[in-house]
Image (cartoon, rainbow, N blue to C red; front, side):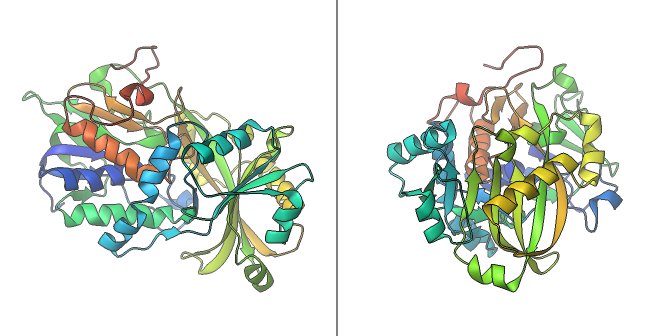
Length: 409
C-alpha cells in the first residue's frame, strides 16, 4: 500500500457521500486526508469476495431540482449547479439533462408537494393532463385522471458510477489518498488517535474519522468506541433493466426520467429512466424500480446475500405489469434484474454531525440522495472542519439518531 499511514482525517466509505466529502475536504483545507473503501467488484457480484457493497453500482439515477420537503430542493439544486464543474475538473462526464416528470393524481400528496416546491423555488415546469402527456411523449399511456409535472431544465439523470469516480479523481488529484480496502474495525490508540484496521491487514491512524458507510454501517465494528448504534433501517431494492430495440430508441429519444405515483395502489409506484447506454454491456437499457411498498426491511447479516442475488420475484412481477400498462408498445428484447439497498433515517434526511470529537457521521441517503450527494458531502466536510455548525440549514435537520433514543447535540 503506497500511502501514508497517518492522517488528519480518514473518510470511511468511498461511495456517493464519501467521495463527495473527499472532493470538498481537499478543496477546503490542506490536511492529510484519505478515503477508504473497496472498488466496485469486476464481474458478477455473486462471485465477489467483498464483504461490503455500495449502491452506486449503476449508470442511471434520477436528478431534478424540486422535492417533497423544504430542504431537498436546496440540496438538489446546489448539487446540480456543480455537476458541470466536477465534469470539467475530472474530465469525466456524468450528467444527462433529459428532463424529469412526476405523474399522479392532482390530489396526491407527492404531486402537491412537488407543485409547492416548484412555486417556492421558481422552478420551470409544465403541468400536463393525461392527453397532453401522451401527445408530448407518445410511448406513454397514463390514466385519464392523472397529471404530469414536467421539468424540462436542470433535470434528467446522472451516471452515478461516473459521478463517484469523478469526485474521487478530483480529490486524489489534490493529494487525497484512496485506499481501496474494507475497514473492519476502528479503535482508539493509547495516543488518542483512531486506529483503522482493514481487510488487507493494514493499520491506518487518523485524528478524525468520517463514517460514510451507507447500508453496511452496522455490519462492522466502526462505533465500538462510542458503545452505541445508529438508528437506521436498511431496505432492500429491486430493479429491472430492459434492453431497448431500435424502434424504442428512436421513439423514446425525448424521454425524461419519470416518477409514477398511484395513491390508490401503492404497489404500482415506480420510477423509470430513459434508455441509457450501459458500458458493461454496450447496449441501451430502460430501467424501472419500485416505490416503498416493496422496500422491505433487511437485517445486516442478510445484506451480502441480497447483493449477490437478483431481487424480489414479487417486485419484479409488479414492475413488469405496471410498465406494460404505462408503455404498452413492445420495445424490449431482453431484461436483467438487480438488487441493492437503501439506508433510511427516522427523520428522512441524512445524518450529519459529530458522534464524538473524533468520529463524524455522514450516513442515510433514504433512497433519494444520489442527485444531491455532492452538497451533502459538502456539509459533511464543513462539519468535520469546524467546531460549530457552519451551514445555512439548521443542524437539527440532520441530527444523529441512536438506537437507544439518544441524539447528538
